[in-house]
Length: 589
Image (tube, rainbow, N blue to C red; front, side):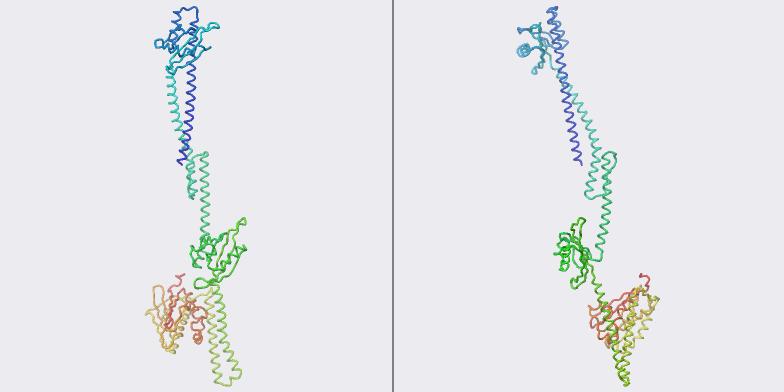
């Protein structure tokens, strides 16, 4: 902004100087013309007076000379009267002694000789001004009166005038310049401030403001810029807030989102998509879609939207790394207000878990049907055999009836487990919470399962703390948890094996470990052992009377107690289940 002020001041100074110089020249010319005219008129009056004296018949030559001397002294000039015969008749005045007659007669007189009226002439070389006036008597010319005067006075007055004029104009220039600088500063400062604020606004700094200290046009300009800055700041704040909300929504939505512009370049990839497909932004952003996408199905979907300009909804089964995942892809064209093609938006919903749940539901129905069908078929077959005549053979009838009873017990156990699992999974399921002693619970369970351990010649070791170990829980459900775990350990441990139950006390929780030396579980099967009807050794577990629902019930009951359960196992080495049960359940809510 200093350049603007400098240019403005330079223009103002140039204008002032031009005006003052022009004014000085004009005044000088007027004064010079006025004084020169006055000087000429004075010499003319002297010449006319000389003529009246010379042509007066009543005066003698002596009187004429005296009058001419007085006239020269009064006018500070020299008078010379020359006849037609080029002779000086009279001569008087202040320049008489130093007057150059030869120069007068050779250079000046010829110029004045033939003039019909008064004529003014300046001899710049000698600094003398001459005024020639013809002497006439009637219609005849009698000679010429030459009045000469020094131009020193004229020059001196001219110099003094120019000094006064220059001094006056200089003082006027300084005063005008000071006033101009002040006025310039007064008017340019708001403009400079407004310009700085405008530059800050152009840079994006909408907090900049200018002063509003005037009520004139500059004040209105400052006020308008401040209003503009406030509006821009409000708009930017609202836009940033909306942008942040939109960005937060896009980045934290559970579905993958991709935005493709009208030329086919990818402009936006959200975090969910990058996590789902395990890609980075560098390989997607600002790349053509057919170069960025690895799956031909997605490319075909995009091309279909480009060609048809209609919404598309598809279910795709795509390989990602070492697994295949199910996606519901929703694609829509982006059309502007003037039917302008903007691009495409793609949304990827991961429905793999839904597909798994659907498959688990189908497997559950199939497993339940199969598990119920087996005992019912056995009961029906042996009942029909008895009705066909096997009742007459008492030994055979008893054998068949024992099988029917065993299958009935198995069917009852299966139905009871299904009812328990259904009850535990219900949303309103509640435990009967009360203080429970783990020592007492495990001692009761040991008494129940000790017979099975002795039958299989398995050593059942229970390690309990010396003092009481209280936790909060449902006694019946806790017994159900430990019976299932210890019974499974006994079932899948061969003869001569060992099953250890260890209870450890901690400040906030108790840890129960159930380990065996049984057949073990493969690492890839561990995540599935808590599924309904999932069996590690299907033939053996079914023959042992298991329903395949025990661990599913255990998992839900542990979670209902706000506890945690984990599994560690090696094939042929055994399995270890670790439970963490808290002493105060309400503190965990």
